[in-house]
Image (tube, rainbow, N blue to C red):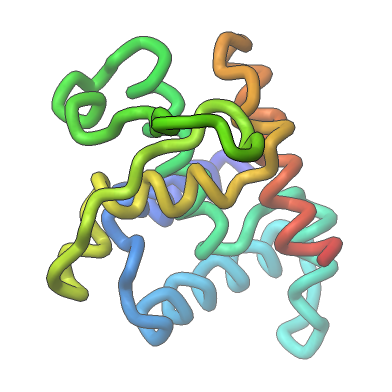
Length: 161
């Protein structure tokens, strides 16, 4: 297991910048994660991978990317760190209260080019605002509590549909 720890860490390295990448690139990383999961669980290549990932509590690559961006967003909102990211996002304030949409919704900024949609200032509100209200309603919780709620929500999306 100690040999796989660094490998899984390398898989996660800078994965937040992969938001908006082509499905072909994400699929390549998913195949690497699937291989690591099979090595850890000592299962065969022909065995279906979804139950293996679920048993290991490993989020698929697409959800790992969302997890990382949501975690960066949480840190930017709560402790304003890193500062360069916290300056890119702001909470949405309604001009008048028509119907409750929930607390801690982020303001979208206009993306002119498709390429710019993968930038943090666009990816962060998209991912954050699509999280369940149970995750984002109280951002005063500890980082460990937030991580737990976030992973539970993404795990449910990935495996429990």
